[in-house]
Length: 132
Length: 320
Ligand SMILES: Nc1nc2c(ncn2[C@@H]2O[C@H](COP(=O)(O)OP(=O)(O)OP(=O)(O)O)[C@@H](O)[C@H]2O)c(=O)[nH]1
Ligand SMILES: [Mg+2]
Image (cartoon, each protein chain N blue to C red):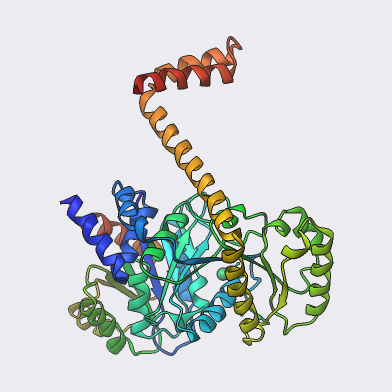
């Protein structure tokens, strides 16, 4: 039986992962396998871990403001590794005005603070079903 | 098309392509219809790796220890495949797999492959697919395969049936070593590591463990060493790593390795036969027949043993 596998990662230098953990737990409770890699991961580490874990999705959480730099780097590294089938979504503190740029660079969705975890879960399930 | 796909996966795994190694493992975990073909392609290339199991209670520092050991092994350029098992929720089937957090530095090392697995309902400390995942990593050329078990703290018998060398991790202050003995952990250790030796009470724990080993059934020559380490501060890890490798080369020479592998294979074979038999029976018996039999059992008209015997007899006949 197939299971949705998701890597939750925190690129950047900020040291808060409460939000990421809440999302991780919600995804687990929805029956998914969540690989949690911890704080301060480089885009290289995130992409390499995602490949070895054969995940369907990467969830990036960033509070430090470096998302416009870090998120597209993850997308580009995935492309370089022929792993663009792994879809990336984001969360954390991201200004509304940055969202169009991030989506254009390949992030499938941004879940801002206050997004209910149910929204995230059903978005992922739907995307997964569409793909397979 | 499917056949070509299996061929491609097998050949890419054999040259160590991590993307395909990862995909092959997923197919095993998902019990894909191609899983048996993949294993068939890889099996002739298996048998070279040394499989190391790390087990012990929750929070003992197993993941930290795996990270530190891999550091040590990488210094002699041994390629390391790592399998990290965490429990799946019995209610939702979901899991949070968090062991990787303790070894971020190994993620981008070309000579290391790390895979996290949920137990997906399996109870013996490993996942059902762990044994076949070992085959994938073995065929892909990893010299050492290190497995971290779930760490429920009870007898995790699966690991003895999968690893060549089992390290049982203990920590100071856990106190209840009598309970450890009762749970049968005593019997599965090839080596005891007392982790967190940088904290108080480590030497007491070492003494207690040594005493318990003397009182247990190990032949004098096979008594597991007790090694204090601090995985966090990287102290004693060289000694532990050395002991793991040393024990393995002794086992290779003495024939213990071969004996143990053959015992493991007998168990594996037995499990696969049982599994396939049950699958076949389930596919051949109609629900109606089953209901009739169960009703007879309920009315005590026939024993469960007789019923099972009859079902098997008719099925085996049908196969001829
Ligand atoms: N003082 C000290 N702390 C350690 C040592 N090794 C690990 N720890 C700490 O113990 C805690 C648990 O470590 P892990 O490596 O996650 O333990 P584990 O056995 O893998 O845990 P589970 O997988 O959850 O069962 C962490 O906070 C580690 O930093 C050590 O040698 N000394
Ligand atoms: Mg662990």
